[in-house]
Image (cartoon, rainbow, N blue to C red; front, top):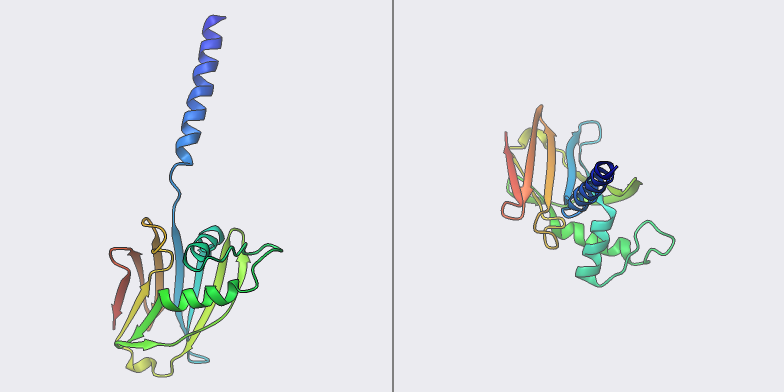
Length: 171
């Protein structure tokens, strides 16, 4: 009987310890996909960012308690999200900055999915594309931003971190 109680105590203690370690480290990650639409000659970007991380960066950077995706969402939240994204996500084509528009977003579980596009009619002249994605890196040292590019028949993925926030694909 003593052994049964001892093993139960060990099992409960071990479970609690292991569960506490699983919450010690949070992963900080965003994923963006860049493609080209030949039919309307636009470069398209789709970015996924965790809602709680975006809430935290808006509070830290702009002092906005945004409460994203709730009925109490701050009226200025979308303005500051666009301002933030435009300063942290940059695209360069052949060395020149490409301006893009943020078309909107949708909620997907615990993420916001942003839809962006830029006019780009000279796909044949594309020699290089550089992506700089520093989204959330100013708040989280461990932030990783994965970028998938699919252009001119080439597929490439970039893992961008604080020490290396940009990458380039040459054609």
